[in-house]
Image (cartoon, rainbow, N blue to C red; front, side):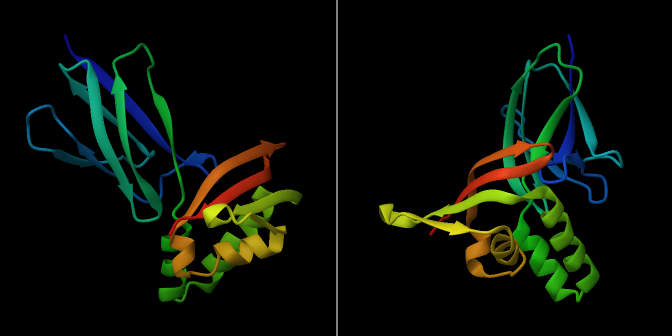
Length: 172
């Protein structure tokens, strides 16, 4: 019996399919060499196998790499959210002189984050927290510094389609 696994990749920030860039997929077969494929133009991919599970890695230039393991189920198509790699995105905009893209990203972030959002950074070694207002946080996310590469979102809450609470840390 064959199992068909079907996945569509969703940008976690925009909550939309990732269609403009193909997602690299590395299927980790049981006792075989990895198989390399990409998502299609709709941001999806399907895999048929006799195994009752699938194990794969997803990679994108502007999203964080993730490893997925799923057992066969009745789910026809799963929507997998991928976290945006803001460091890689901002570096791309700066390096390629894409000022309009950089401005659009700032605008997208401004629309995604509520004006009165509670944003705070958990400081290392139990030193406390640092509070951010919306503009300071957007500035942090749109300046490609080394610390941006290490930002990890601990918690985020949404209301009415906007982020109203965000807790993050900078991994060392």
